[in-house]
Length: 173
Image 1 (tube, rainbow, N blue to C red):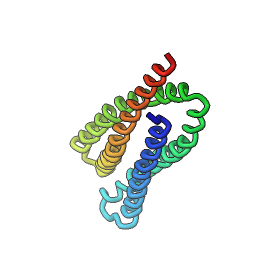
Image 2: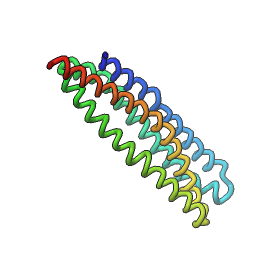
Image 3: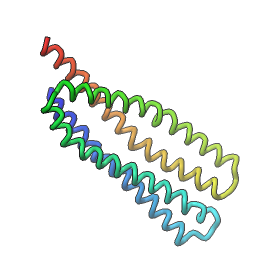
Image 4: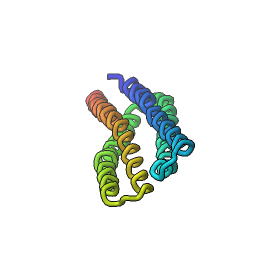
């Protein structure tokens, strides 16, 4: 099994999915601009800042992930060629930590925040809080969509790393 190819393929797949954060971030920012220019009602005006903040957050997440994963592609080759065993071990640790983070943040905290935002919509009847809640839900749904696919990719990559480590250990015994 060529784990370097698997690592590089994983990073390239991440480079494909992270621009969706950027795209949705830009969509939120354009929506904010639209609310600012065209919004006549209180609720439309209330969306200006929440959609701008959500757009900036998604844009920041997307750009951060894009440049991090772009740098990883070259770092993978260097690290693998220097010491394949150490590379595999460090990647296993990194993917395990990421999978735990997904389990806690993406699949537990984000749904709880969405539920809280839904409750705010039901119980607080001001335009600002409704706009904040609805924008929060929309942004978190985008994160769930993109990170849901990223989770499955990193889980598959983690399995390949574990197999590569087992192969490496049996090779040296």
